[in-house]
Every structure is written in C-alpha cells, then in structure tokens.
Image 1: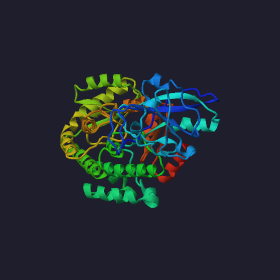
Image 2 (image 1 turned 135 degrees about the vertical axis):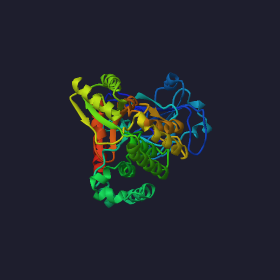
Image 3 (image 1 turned 60 degrees about the vertical axis):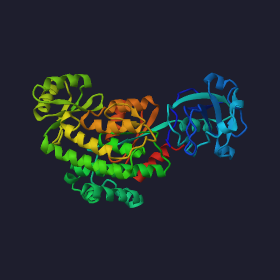
Image 4 (image 1 turned 120 degrees about the vertical axis):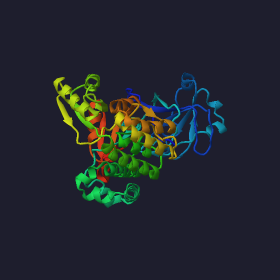
Amino acid sequence: MSDVRPRRERAEVEDDECLLVALVHQPVLDVDRDHQGVPCVQLLWLAVEAGRECPPDDVDELLGIRVIVLRDPVASGNRGDAHEAGGRADRLRAEQRSHVSAPPRVGGRLLDFPDPGLRALSFHLSSSLGRRDRDILARAVSTVAFLYPGQGSQKVGMGAELLETEGDLLQGYLAQAEAASGQPIRRICLEGPMEALTRTEVAQPALFCVSLAVTDAARSRDIQPDFVAGHSLGEYTAACASGAVSVEDAIELVSLRGRLMGQIGDESPGAMAAVIGLGADDLRALCEQASEAGTVALANINSPTQIVVSGEEDGVARLMELAEKGGATRVVRLQVAAAFHSELMKPVQEQMAEAVREVAWTDPRVPVASNARGGLLRDAESLQAALVEQIASPVRWVECVQALVAEGVETFLESGPGRVLGGLVRQIHPEADVFSADSPSRLDEFAAQHAK
C-alpha cells in the first residue's frame, strides 16, 4: 500500500481551534478488501478524546462527499474506531464503513494509504485543545521527501558507521552488488582508494547500497517518505525505495548502468562542464551556437544558475569559451570521459531499456520525481519509461524540486553520502527544511529535530 500523507494547507489557528486534515481518496482502496468507488474524506482528528465535538453538520454538504472522523487511537484507546459525523452520516452503512479503517500511525501521521488522486483539505474545529496539541496537529501534516544522491557524492568510508552499528542490510546489499558488478564494492567503499571508488562501475552500485541502507535505518526510526527523488543514478535508488522494483533487480540494473556508462567513454568519448551564473535559457542559446563545433546540450539543470553541459569534446570546449565571455561567474571542466545525459548515451539507453523491460515492476507506494520529465510519477509504466529516458536526457532537478514543493513538501531528507542535493534544494527553495543524513547518528539528529 502507499505511504502517503496530506498536503499541508497553511491556516491561522486560533486559541479555541485545532487543525484537521482531510485526505480525499477516490476511489478508496483497502489492502485486504478490493472495494472501489467509495469516495470519502478521512479526517485526522489527533489528540481529541472520543466524544468531543464533531465537524459541523454541513461539512459533508460543503464537500459533497461522505465524511468519516477517525478518533485518535492514543487518546481514545480505541484503535480503528470511526465516528460518524455530518448531515449525511446516516448514509454510512456498516458495509460502507468497513471500506476504510483507521490506519496505523507513526509519530501522529497517517500511513499506508493508496494515492489515486490524493488531495488535501483543512478544517477548523472548535475545541478546548491547548497550544501543545495544536502544535502536534500542525507538525503531523508536514510532508517529507527523501532525496538520493548521484555519482559524485561518493567518499571513502561511506557506510562504515552503518556497518558497525546496524549493518545487516547494508552488508547484504554490498554482497549482492559485488556479485552483480564483479567489483570488490565493500572493500573499496571502506578503504578506497578514491580513484577506484570514483570509477562508474564501482561508484554507482556503492552509492545505491549505502543510500538504500540509510533509508532502511530511517524507516526503523519511523521516519517515512511521502515522496522520493533522486539525481541521475539516485532516481534508481528512489524507484527502489518507493517499492516499485525489488532490491535484487535494482542492484542488477544499477550495476549494469554503471558498467555500460563506464564503457561508453571508450566507444563514444565526450566531455562535460559545469557553468555557474547563467540561467538555463541563456545557456541553451549558447549551446546552439557551440554546436557548430560539436554536439553540446544541457545535461543537469541543478539549480537556477548551476547547470552542467554535456556533449562532444569540441562542442563542450567551445561552449566553455562562450559561457566565460557571456558572463558566467565560473566554468569548470568535469573530470569525466563520457557525455552523460546527452544524445551520445543513446547506446547505453537502448541496452538499459531492454534490461528494464525484463524486470518486474509495480506501482510505487509513494510518488517518484522524474529527472527526464520534471514531474511526479505514480504508476509503474511511466516510471519504467522515465528511468530509461533519463540516460540520454537532461536531469531537470529544478523542476523536480519545484514539483515536490507544489505538492506541499516542506522537509527534504538527503538519504546517503554527501550534502550536494541539500545545497541545491536550498538554492531552488530557500524556505525548505533540508537535512542530510548518511549514518544512524545523523538520522537520530533528524528524528530529534523533527519529533512529533
């Protein structure tokens, strides 16, 4: 089932009011019973004792749908109870009520609900709740996106604390990655040298394993994602974390991706460069001019003014000259031998497409941000296609972050080595609550800061 939570609607809460959050599911699905076509609203009624005031009688008239109020299982001591409310409550027959039961909660959040057309609403309800309970309600509706780093975030020693304190899963992932890649992933992760860890065929499965193990450690602390997003390689980690593909299959795909991308530099040499201080439109126009010397195009739109270009050697060299003359504050040649996320990656894309088709996929439990499309994906077919598209398409990271913010995401947890993505999110959305965690101790800090 999906692990979804409501979008937050900002509203002033007076001293005599508490905030309610409505989740609208249409249709409502149940993991044990396949009842469809029963629209309803589920009101998260936290810290309110059973028997307190119900929403106004006309609330369901206002919404035009049936209303169920879930009593707080902690406060009422009745987990799973539902309290009928509203002018049409008599229409909620027993068999209708059975379609939706109170979900399990972690830290005051709703868990494990599917997301066919999720939207959120907020209500004010008179009550005698104190400020502390209102703060709990406000925090309970914030949403979290897990972010997964791409190649370049690797560092020698990554995963060491995880292996020492709670490393069973990571050890298993690394063993699978070594079998799939033929590389001594664990040793290179822990001991280096950095030159070996930077090799594409090593870095990609290594980053995947560590990032996914950090996610496992987060979930063991009841830290759950509402959305997931990854940068380049990280999108594969995000797809696995969403439940769309098994760990075993994802490791095989990531290992193949790393191997193919490592080989393509010999077959189709290319270059990449980072340009700081120019916007995407201006840099795209410069790429068109530079393409007279050789193919070059935008590859990673990391922030409004931090963009990577990719293409043939002569085209990238010409672009660097034009960018410096055109007002870029900094232009840096990247130490890579291939033109990642460009049309020169078409051979890799074709081979990855075949591999992706051979793998079993399911709809993700939480929406996944697509690098190639710059939006959120909620079905297996779209996700499969997007993971193939991104091989030879630009990483539209700015649009990914903007799409998450538009869905109400307020907190971004970078799950894995490095703090690159957190820094980019701050550039794109300065108001974001950003935290980077690559170890159990960092996750503990996050949990303490975001305690419900």
